[in-house]
Image 1: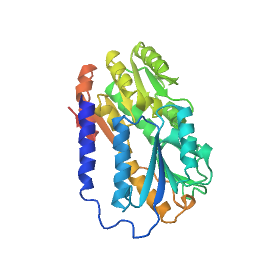
Image 2: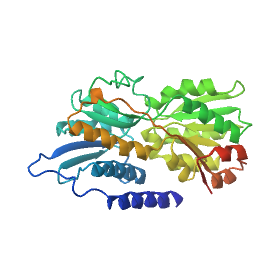
Image 3: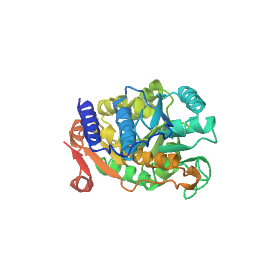
Image 4: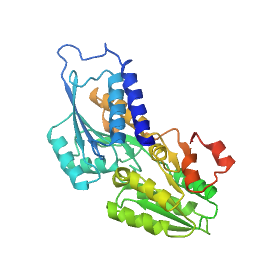
Length: 331
């Protein structure tokens, strides 16, 4: 499949970068081995999860941290289960690591509930200030900091590209996981939707609810869809992609890997880069800095990716003006 081929290329590219990792910046003789906890809300055999973790490890390697030499890393994979995330968070906290890395909002929430003292660095979290994970963006003030994922202008962009590729759209569905921070962008999406277009949010808690939502949206005339982030969404991304083709449903995703796997369009930041950059904050914590003093950072670049092959399968003609604005076109 195209998705698997992409992941193999990314994995090989990351491994290839390992050849340039410094060999001299290792632990000094007698230096204490540091311990890092990692909680990822995907399954261990998920190729996207593996690529993200490898990027995180690469970032640490480039800063001189080597597993088994000057650091030990405890990995936990919780999938889309909130209960497994809580259990895994409790396990990691019990190991008393020097710092814990939270791979998304689900992981962060579980860790926040488990400890208010151990340092936590997060990536891929939608709105940490509005959700109360930090006291401020400039000075988080507690034991948590990291890399936020979205800014409100993304909502308008999702609506814009959808209505441009499917100008007859009269109904836009929004799929999200209830309780996930991404749902805070529903008001932004609502404000961006033209008066002639109806917004239809669908909160999904399981694969069966996701299937039902796709069927309901797909059964509406002139419908389109926005998919927000979340562990459940990521875990069942193939279902969404296949259903969108089945119902000939124009759809925009927040991440490139959806589009590379066969989705129509995506607009959002580079998630892999967030994992790599998070390693820099983990390094700074290990060297004595406090999360309270490390400002929350946002992406500096957002990419529009369009899959022309999928557009043809959906019977859509992508306007040349939209193609010209795309950062990447998959043919």
